[in-house]
Image (tube, rainbow, N blue to C red; front, side, top):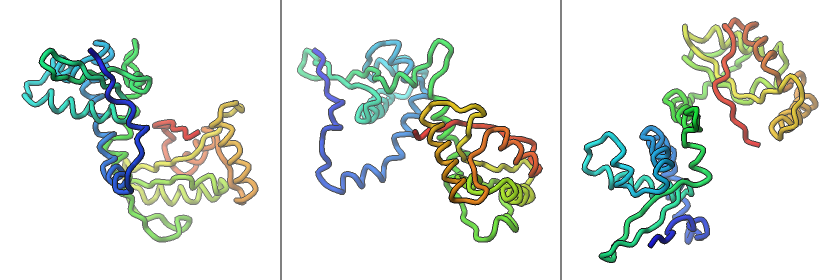
Length: 248
């Protein structure tokens, strides 16, 4: 007999502030478990089997670790608390039970399709060492329009759209001069399509463009061609778009 035992946790109220604090302190565990699950191909295995216990999933992995089943079950349990998987209990003849896991509408996006494509690589990119290291940002005082401090990587989020092309070129030239060979300038900005589109993201960026126009002299949202113009003008070899993230 199969009984759903997970999936209703969202209905439970936090009994105290301490519970929420503990969740925040350990929140980094979730993306780590997601990344490990993707690398092990757990979502593909579960999709193939329909539903499976940790021991059944472990039997499809190239491992001799005697604790593999126990460790997998703890990982899959966590994913179920976040509704990434569904966990159900199967009663045994001896009165015991075992947990079995199946996919949800969320986890299906991490299952490889017929072309081998899923959201897995995007999550891997965000978990990559380069991205993780970027959180150890050192804030250095000074005027970036006069001189940028020598660093291996310069990070600009929401900076360029507040300035005119001339100001952006001055800033990026200083950035280019301060970078070592193979250094990088990472820019996080909204990108306007050349021709207007009707999606929520484009509407939001276009509206922000008008805010920049009225509140910041010369400020504006830019197209890919306009970003390329700034990059080439500052001395960079070009631009490379690593990922597209929408918050709308």
